[in-house]
Length: 119
Image: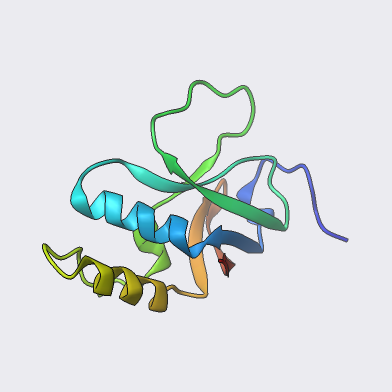
């Protein structure tokens, strides 16, 4: 049975996110336009969804805070920066380079979770 209603990210085992959200966040960050992240909103459970979000756009929290995952966490460290030209080729390469796991911040330290890409 899946764990539910937790404030600690250590219960997360799988993260679902659209490839388009990851690529859009990565591109926004690379172009310096917005502080885009992939946001995981509590309560935390074994399977969670991450959605495109602009960091700093939220207010105060009464309980557990959402987790913001940097878009670069979804691609290898050596994935190239956004080019001045060839944007469509870069976007396609970014989709092809999406990793099967990412590290998120838990209250007891980093947690490695599997990623399932939607769309």
